[in-house]
Each structure stands twice: as C-alpha cells, then as structure tokens.
Amino acid sequence: MKISLNLDKTFINDSVLDERRGFARQILEDLYTCTETYNGWVKWPSEDAWHNIPRIEAEAERIRNLCDVLVVVGIGGSYLGTAAILEALGGNRPGRPEVIFAGTNLSGAYHSRLLKSIADRDVCMCVVSKSGTTMESRLAFTIMKRFLDEKYGTEAYKRIVAITDPVKGLLREETEEKGYASFEIPANIGGRYSAFTPAILFPLAVAGIDIRRFVQGAKDMEESSYIRNEALDYAMTRLALMESGKDVEIFEYYDPCYGKIGEWIKQLFAESEGKGGKGLLPVSLTFSTDLHSIGQFLQEGRQMFFETLLNVRNWGDDVEIPFCAGNAFDGRMLNEINALSLQGVVAAHSKAGIPIVQIDIEENDEYCLGQLMYFMMITTAVTGKMMGVDPFTQDGVEKYKAEIRALLD
Image (cartoon, rainbow, N blue to C red; front, side, top):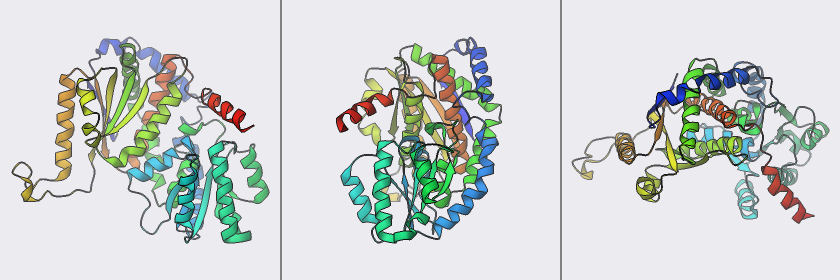
C-alpha cells in the first residue's frame, strides 16, 4: 500500500478501539455485500469501472480532437473529484485540453468571465448531473448550450457529452432527444462516492490523466487487508475523538495543490455524517500558509478539534535554496525545509495536547490519489454507520433548495 496511517499522537488507547472492532468489521462486511441502495461504489473499482474505461478513452480522444478547452458543468460530487485530481497533479497534460468548471456557483460575474475567456477558443462541454434539475448545473448548462449553438450552429451537439442517470431524468431525456454522447452515473452510486465512475474519469481522460492508474490504486486498496484494518482504525479513532469532545476535524496538507483534495474531503465527510445533530465538522488548511493566520488559535485556542495531516512523502519537483539565504538554509532543498516545518508543527501541537492523525502518502500521482480517495470513502461510510446515521443520504440539502424554489415562485 502507498498509504500508511499513524495514530501514535491521537491520545486514544488501543483498548478503546478494540472494544468496537467487531462492530466496525461487521459494518464493513455489510458494505461489501453491496446490497444497500447507494453502496454500489464499494466494489466499483475492481469490477464495473474497468468495463467503462475503453469507451471513456475512445470518447475522450474524439473530444480532444475537437477542442482546446473542456467546460465541465456540475456541482458537488459532480465536479469536485475531477477538480481535486487535476489540481493535485498540476492540471491538464501538455497538448491536452484545459478543463475548467461552470455551474459550481450562481455568480453571474464568474460565468461572464468564463464565457469571455473561452470566446476565441475551441470548446466542448461535459455536463454531469444525475437528474438534470440541480439549479446551478441546470442554469450553467443552458448558458453553455447557447454559447455552443451560437459558435458552432447545428454541429454544437457533437461537442456535448452528458453523464447522467441511466434511464430517467431531464438530462437523460434531452440526451436521447438531441443525440449527445453520454455515459451513465450508476443508480446505486451517489455523487460524492462517484470518484471512479465516468462522472470523474471522463473529464480526467480528456485532460490526459492516467485513469487506469487512478482506478488501479483504488482497486488495490479495495482488495487489500489494509482497508479492513487501518481504515477501520481511522474510523474508530475519529468516533472516539468526537465522543471525547472534539467536534472539528482539521485536514492539513503542506502544498497548495491539495486545496481541492481538501474540498473533496469536506463534502464527502460533511454530507455523509452531518445528520441528526451528529457528525464532525471538516475543515481544511494549507500549511505553512495558514499557520500565519490560524496557527495561533491551533496552538493556544479552544481545543474543540483534532488534526488529520495528509503528508505526501515525495513531491517530485523541488527548488534548491540559494546560498545567500543564510547558513541554516545554504544549499538545501525547499521540500526539505517544508518537511522540517511539518515535523516542527506536529511536535508543537502534540506538546499542546492536540490529537493528530497522520496519513502518509508515498507519491503525488494517480495511483496514490486513487488509494487515498477510496480509503477516505470507506472511512466516512464506516464512521457514519457507527454514529448511527445513513452516510449515503443528504436530506438536509433539500431544505434550502425548497426555500429558494419558494422565492423563485
């Protein structure tokens, strides 16, 4: 495994975990039966994902030949996985279309700037929506369709790829009527668990990301004993820390390219666990940047939180520090100083009594990111069930939508 877990600084005694290990293992075994309405993702990396990949790659090649920018329309789980992987890996590969996002908000200024930025470029669109009715996605889709119609006329439909429900919904109906190329979001997989479905794999393939390595990482994690041990330990530790009075889990990373990984994790954990007055509030911070804004609070403020550190061991690219920086830095590499910063923060926070979970990631590549995402998906599903909530629903989200609909009416 390219992911390793360190719980030595959590201040949770092994006996606390051992008391619940049988319960956690039963939850995991139940998940692996894939009999629940929305747990089709559990075995997806080892089974169905591979059946889709050849057609995804073929369609991605067709789209690449038509454009130099792909606009992905979607919100939440319909885009965060794509955005997270792309940002972590430095964006599209050379010679491949740039992927940008619409429908992630309702800002007219944002979408106006987006349209201006692509006015003189060759454009294709990938719309990701299970129902086709999500407001942000629906409005951005109509705006982008108008743009493509005005730019390409009757050929516009060839530049649209829809990823939606297999048989129902407004987007599926329009896809069949207009003849868009399309892929399916499986009915038994919710948006935030869709990282290894066409919803994420297709735009990644257009950008030139190695989706086979990405899925292989998840497959190896799915089939490993690691998921039956360390993932359960992390889930049980999170629950024990919550019960000890820690209400916030702060995810930390030492490179800004993991910012969208943090956003993906926040949605996964918050929507899965935040129900019935339960759940940990997920927060994400970029170090060392945020140490200069919130570091004082972390060190000496009210300790209602614990920290989960995502530590990439090998970043690859690096910069040598000039000799004029001073004796302590002369001739050293910047990533070495970044690693020392990490060690210093862990030491200081641990001495202050802050529980710290450390997840080490061997490399920043497709394979390791596949392992990390699958690991996190299993963790939140198990933790949610141990809390007594359904980790696959999000009924609370519908309440603000109903208020908006009332205002529109």
